[in-house]
Length: 319
Image (cartoon, rainbow, N blue to C red; front, side, top):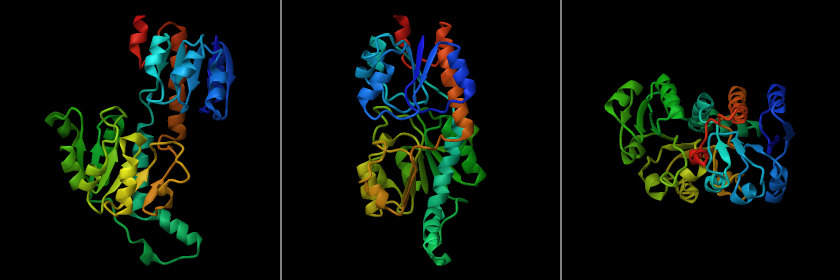
């Protein structure tokens, strides 16, 4: 069996040996420069481990031996599941990891913006040592609005409560019991937007959540509020956000994800000092990387035993 690691992932010697025990292993340590290069890499593979690179129908059909795509991530919106299923290719993901890393990063971005750390650091390097430029706001007693109460959302709530913040939340399945267990208040989206000092997004990208934050929603937010997105870029209408930031309809944004990645170098976001930008790294801690690789490799091992796990296109198993 040929196993191809098609783009860069965290892969220690321990995990290399586990994969080598299953078959011929080919590792690519750089991002493909083109779609053709990607398809060339996987054309003879039976198993492909892929990080962030998209796997479309053309790529899948170009690999006639392909039986498993093991995603080195949770999201699978960059894979053509319909094509994979039609061609009998199992797609497995890493459904649960980096909860703590992403949740902590929400507050890294929030504190950076509220306390103007990014501006202080930049200006200090230019010789500006004047505290009056950096009067900010504290988290204590502020209201945070958490969209989504999956594992990451729950961890964000726990951390926010440690800061003595008031927590509002929108969730797909609210209940008094769940609200009591989390120690929060469930509200509708408009209420959350209008009452929160920080709005943080923790929903998956689906047709229903795409651009769920757009012109109307941004207009509901406080002028002093900040938006944090560590979920998926397309959950936010980026053009609407840029307009809101330019016109000071909200105070700022902390963005780890974007509608188009890498973020284009001509993006207006790069010129704004009320925005903190990071290159999709909220998940990026040594602990979470190891956990992600462990599950991704285990997905391959279980597949070879005839017991595929974490399958995101389960209908393929019925064929």
